[in-house]
Length: 305
Image (cartoon, rainbow, N blue to C red; front, side, top):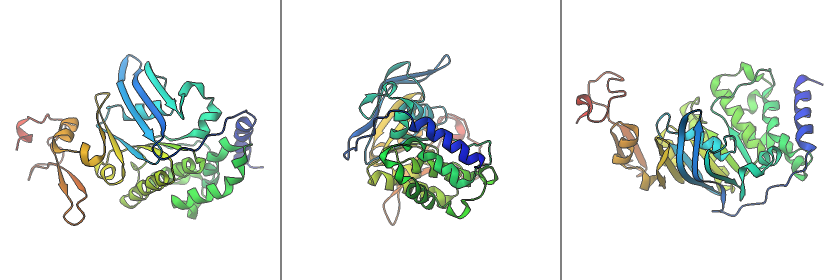
C-alpha cells in the first residue's frame, strides 16, 4: 500500500465511522446558505459588518470588490470556516455551528485561494480525496464516476499520474477544483478559482460553475474579473469596506458610477457591438505610463477627464 492509499484510507475511516445525516435535495431557488446581519472580526479589525446574503440552488453568485473588501472572509463564513462575531450563518436550513464537520463536508465544498500539498500525491489521488466524506454512505459507489467526471471537466485526466507538486500553478488550480467537484456537495464555495489560469481555462471554470448551477447546486465564487462575473453570474454581491454595496443581477448592479466608486477608478460599461453583452472597461488615459494613476483618488488631476 502506498503512502497515498494509507492517507486516503485514514481519512475515509475517520469520516466513514461517524453517524451522519445525509443532505436532502434542494428545489431551484431554495436557500442553501445564508448570512444574516453577519459581522466578522479578525483580531481587532472588523472585516464584515451587518452583511445579509443568500446562496440559492440553481444560481451562481459572484462576490466582487476591491482587495480587502471582505470577499474571502464572507466566503469562509458561509462555509462555516470562520465564526461570526455577530449575526448568523445557516447552511441547509440549520445554524452552521449545529452541523458536525462530517455533515458539513457532505453539504459544502470549499476551494481556497491557494492549493498546496506537502506530499507528492498523484493527481488522481488528490481528486479522490474529495470523495472521503461519502465513505460508508449509500453514495460511496459514486466514487469512481465522480472522480472521472471531475477530472474530465477540468481537463486534468491527461496528467492523472503526475505528482501534484510537479504541476504548474494553473494545473494545480484545476486539480484542486476537480477535488471540489468530485465531492458533489450542493454548495460550492470557490475563492478566486480563475486567478492562476489562462484565458481559455478561466472560461472553462466559469462554464463549469454554470453547469453545476444548472444541475441544482448553489455556487458562490469570488472573482476579480468583472467581465467574467457579468457573463456567467446570475447575481453579484458587490463588497465595499466590509459591507454589501449592491446585490442583484449584473445588468442591474453594474453601472459606471457604482463600480467607479467601489474601485476608486473610473470604469465605463459598454454593450458588446455584436452580442450586447456587458463590456467593463477601466479608463486608461492616452499616453500615460502603466500604473500612473494607481492608488490615486478619482478627483486626482491625472484621473480627471
